[in-house]
Image (cartoon, rainbow, N blue to C red; front, side, top):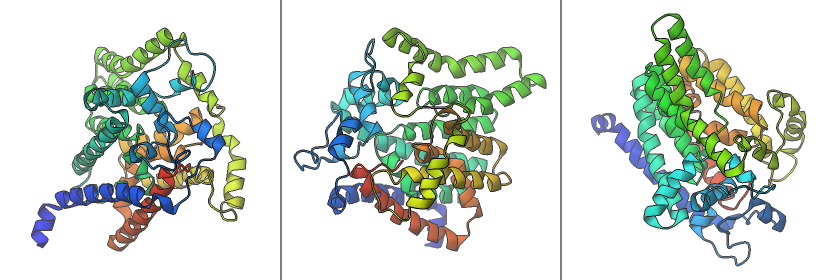
Length: 394
């Protein structure tokens, strides 16, 4: 039995992974009534239900709609209706351009086969989940070891905020592309790292700082004459081509090539490159009120500030453990939201930062590994119930 588990450990973990996914969906379906539905009339309107959650009006639970809270509704709308032409001012017209096109395009393609946009999104999420499982195992095994790969996978998909990977958010697709971008960059395969980066940039906009990680080895190679200027220019063009197409598309549809920048203003004002210095109120509220007040609709906003501090600490200690490429990727993912937007959803943006989980897998012994797995699993169940009831968790 011991030999079997060692030889086929990844397959055992994979079946456990499938069981966890089924269990999470079952908990949300079966026990969602254990927590009250989280939307008031004002919040219901502001969230903009493209596919209405019938619990609000009729007290009817529809699973495929219920696991599509908040931003997921926008991606479903884009996948179903596309982007509006010449949009009028307002969140429901121009605000939709804040959401980048690659993920809804994937849903659209599957929807053309299955004929239901929510089912198409559910299928795409689960396909991407399995792709990410095997991609993460392969890449971490090649870059580090199989043992660390297995521990990383367990930590990664048990983490409480991994609930977003099981819904209709672009983090699933972003993670898949990020894993392979990191792998190709580590192997100095600049062609495929350019392709991966080019697709990353039209999935979400908060990872644009990854260009710094990509350009540095290119410029170094050109300087050391191990890479020609012609090839360097070609890789750069490949990396920005889809983003350029997205700018052109936005221009012809809306008249503004960078409309996604102003579109974000409909949610929160942004202060590029200095936003990190404007979070004193959030820090104060987290310290003074998060323990004293009961759990409510916006409590998890305070966790975003906590994530900033925790991840900064992890990055400090991970510098000696992770390779340069993996460490700089995580740093850019941490820094990107701070210099380009507000801290709202910061915790969700960080769940794709798989090098952080590699570090965690590298420094935990067997006892700590088991303890963290139990805590993560409890947290995942707890978080999933709030998630399906439309509480803001990231």
